[in-house]
Image (cartoon, rainbow, N blue to C red; front, side):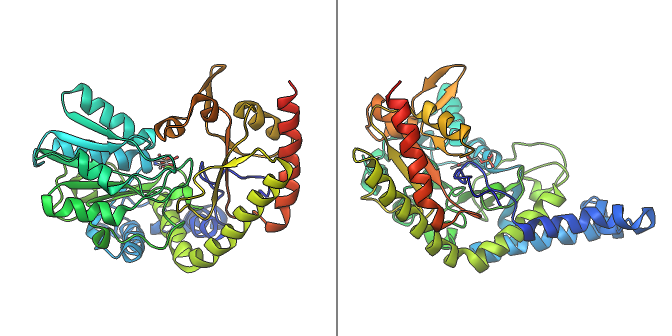
Length: 393
Ligand code: PLP
């Protein structure tokens, strides 16, 4: 188990039960020789013969699991290649449908690039976009969304939980604002899946919900978009009629099997795991504060994901901290991404009104499978040592 890995919001290790579920369908062929190529191993889910039907039934089993978890109908689940494709499909597919109320769009300014970039593209193409800033605690207020709405607003997009600072957004309240006006609502649920109690798109009045398997100990390269029946949508990936015609291309059967298993596991273990992770998060925050008195825990006044701790260490460049910890075998993430030697400040912190100094001196710890409460004091000690050496540079 990767116990020095504290970057579970970036990606997660495969759960052993997910690996087992997936390997059953790979190993059947290898272990037992050519005769044992079961129909489930390689059939195309679109084929009508037995091989295809067996693959189809595995895909549909996984779709059922997701649908049950979200309390929606299986027909409303569209499998994709991940969260990025789900976000693109929702935003570009809804706006291309020709069925939107108008050409004005509203999006929160601290979304993941998988949401920001499609909106930027639409803006270039002549759509009007209002970018709504979160407050200093990382919350997008329903009244800020209400203020941005116009008679011609067609689509609003707000994430369920922010990937960097971990704040949980008032999605149900925003949904209540939009529904009576007939405005389509997209929610990026990638970081919320499994880290919150199950999201029920109907109760939250969401039309599109993006999900990704690799954030919940599932495989990489597979995700899903919930598309409410009747929501405005046009396919982006043109080809076959897979996924109700919303996403052409042979399904990633193996990935989908793993995704289904990972969702089964969060349905079973999610609640206990969240309680465990809150303890870990709070223990690390306390231990860091003892060792680094000027450390700031960000968004403490807001509801946050159980697994995410975001801190600022004044006068301590986050890219150097990440490198220093990496040299000790510890994986964390900086609020700022480092590209070709230059540090790019976190757009999330800047959107929250933080200054450049804070945006380049922040660290994110995100916990999950394999992390232990007993290791938090040792982790805080290592962070304090590396921080002291970075400050001494
Ligand atoms: N949305 C959010 C909030 C994310 O955190 C991520 C991944 O970091 C994505 C979308 C993209 O998901 P994927 O990596 O599956 O494309």
